[in-house]
Image 1 (cartoon, rainbow, N blue to C red):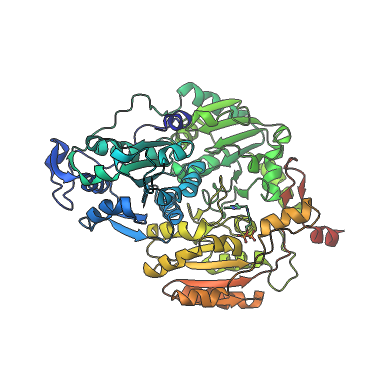
Image 2 (image 1 turned 30 degrees about the vertical axis):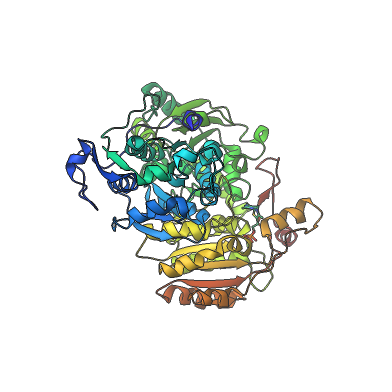
Length: 602
Ligand SMILES: Cc1ncc(C[n+]2csc(CCOP(=O)(O)OP(=O)(O)O)c2C)c(N)n1
């Protein structure tokens, strides 16, 4: 069992989203209110599994069947209130559950059979733990009696996932099943969220099973701190009041804590600019005058210069990731750090905190806003404006279709209000720089693990969370080819998502590093691919190819007008690089800019 996972990820208690378990909803077969009070044997283990999920409010899961999982799937037929989406690869099931969880705040559920089905989940589970996403992964296991014999499709999935789950379980007795599932959901979504895996031996799924759904979770060692101590609030308020050049750093924790409104009110109260991490984007509308956009390796120059010249950083639910800080000895040299996180293990992990604050970001912001008067930082904000004027974000592309123009056209088409899932690479950074997210919690991407192949499967889940509007997927040609089999799932589920392929013929981000730091030796990065428009058509998905900037408005309009899914194959300039860029190991103040811009300026 992943006890170390729990220790690493101390988390918050209580859960606003938990349903009331004292009165059970009637569901599927049986499911009357008595079951919570008196154990009954009228279920199989597989039925107990689905009874528990119904009680957790689960109505959609992503998965793939197999031998050991047949009893699970067989019983699922009795629970029409749970919709199973058949993905085409188990990795996609984990990413879909992850996308759903990020977009709803609920726990996403994925299901796989034993052996290869379970191991195919691993990248998705690792993606979820790195970005603190609550998913429950259900894996079938060979029968308990043959565990340890190298039985057909036996794999020790709890062993494999121990370091990448918040917690995991191998169920050894049917009577533990309901308690374990109750705990799995509780642990996944409370405190610092994360993935929990439950491994279910086939014979436990088929045997008659006691069913008593516990009202409460009892894990005495798990006591996440939600509210910061009053003395911490006082000290933090004093620090903020004394600061001359404060900067708020908004991380993924702002989304996790649903603290968007509290962030805005806090920033307005103290009149401080807000810089976000990659995953913190869309926590404050890009239209807000205090919103500076993304900092870090490919952050916009004015955001990085604000951080580097700050005297106080107020870090909210962000973990001082190396892609954000750049070289640590050079990071924000004049700033004190007020570090707010629900996970004490994050505080002081990479950057020493002048003032640590363990707690839920939303509650901390509420308390700080209440403790502070309105502050005036107009000189500081004016100074940041000079950074913006001196180092604007520019597009210098001379090719027929600069990739940045694709993102800008998407922004214009959707007026900054798209629900957007991006993959990993240059295109991800162009989205982060050029799409101005006006809508809260509207951007989903793999940040910590940087998992290529994330976007299309994750969008399967995000789209379920946003059923009435299309989800936009922005994906490189390399990343798309990692999971393009999910076009079949999109077609089968009739999901209206729009897929924008940034087709540059390269694994572009790696090509960029080869160009800049490895003598332009492009080894292993030129990539061919199928003709994506007829490929999509073969799945029943219409689309078109775009090769010039002039074609963009009509192409996006066509995508938008289509009721169902649509694919745009954008043939972008393969030689473009993402700028600004902070050279690895250097200060965020010394960013490289597009040499074409520099020669024009001189
Ligand atoms: C699964 C996985 N393998 C390898 C990498 C390393 N990697 C990071 S970005 C990148 C290139 C991405 O290429 P593409 O999807 O075409 O996007 P582009 O950078 O061209 O926009 C690679 C190979 C990764 N992040 N994930």
